Amino acid sequence: MPSISVIVPVYQAEKFLRDCVESVRRQTFSDWELLLVDDGCTDGSPALCDELAWEDDRIRVFHKERNSGVSETRNVGLDHVRGTYIAFLASDDARYVTGQTITADGGMDSHNPTVAELAGLSETALREA
Image 1 (cartoon, helix red, strand yellow):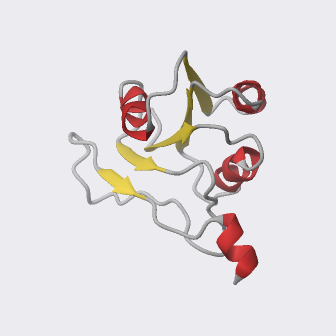
Image 2 (cartoon, one colour):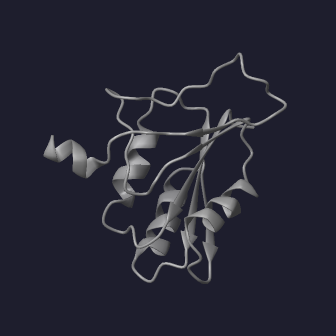
Image 3 (cartoon, rainbow, N blue to C red):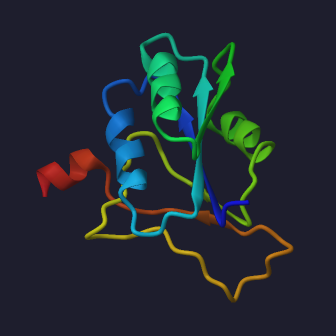
């Protein structure tokens, strides 16, 4: 069982999804799973999700037939988490090793998953800074 489940709702994210996923894969903390939840995308995102999952067995993909918004899409991810802790990441965000990294706080109650919103700069904001 992974320490952290990172849920990424995916909608029309083909252009930036790979950067988002790669930023998680480059973390120094490696005991995680990444749940990509396709929210009824009509671009190339569903195929890209499948490709990324094929490349790394810590990545799992769930496809929805129709778009229903970020809240319901996150809930699909929540239905499938295996981790002790839960984090959300937007598909247009990226975590950088030199910035914030994913960590697990061993002091947290392992019987009750903790929901933590990962706040950070999107890749676009980093380019503009």
